[in-house]
Length: 297
Image 1 (cartoon, rainbow, N blue to C red):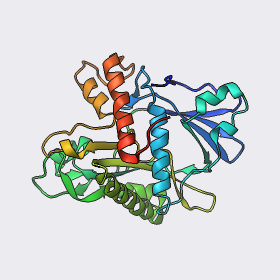
Image 2 (tube, one colour):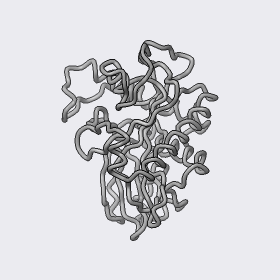
Image 3 (tube, helix red, strand yellow):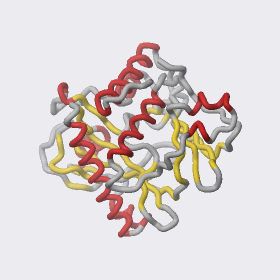
Image 4 (cartoon, rainbow, N blue to C red):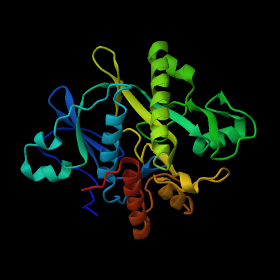
């Protein structure tokens, strides 16, 4: 395992943002450097322990999918080597293998969530209302069951606290009818193509979230991360069964551990035992290798 990076500290570029996992720096007026740290957030709270190599895995996985799905929608990548934009040679180690230089775009104020299986908050919603985010589903579905068709269940993007599920009508109010329709259609197409590919590698993509921005001409562009183990639920197909929450390759493993603790899901988050950290790091690597055939250098 490599040296874990909890937070980047580049001095040669101006930091303009810090998300739950990513640190963002300005590169000129029209580009940004995004450094993916090894921080892990669960229940929208950043945990105190980094997961070694997690950032490198996420970066590699997103890079793979951006390449694979580029024919569906343009994406944020510039192709510029991140190590070429940090001027201090001592800072190159912080960006190597875990960064991208992207176009500066106007992000849309929503998360584009697509669900192909009934799990997580969708399952809770269905049990109470027979619907997921206002979308009526057939009666009698079980936990983790495959839906007849993937559904688009958008959410707001919360700077602090929990993202909230919203209806498609609310998306229309936020970004307009044409753009809302395009985001929905593109998201479902991305999910379907990725799911079909992953199935051939023995992995079920239960659900995922995409983020989009627009360029100066108003074109839709795929941004942030895409189909990583942080933004998706990956299940090994060989241990999947309907009626139970399947084991997964993503941070659900950490969520399940945290659910066993007496923690109210507000900061500060509890520390993770060494074995949970090691197992989580291993799960991220396994997902990368199975899906992409790539191993971390």
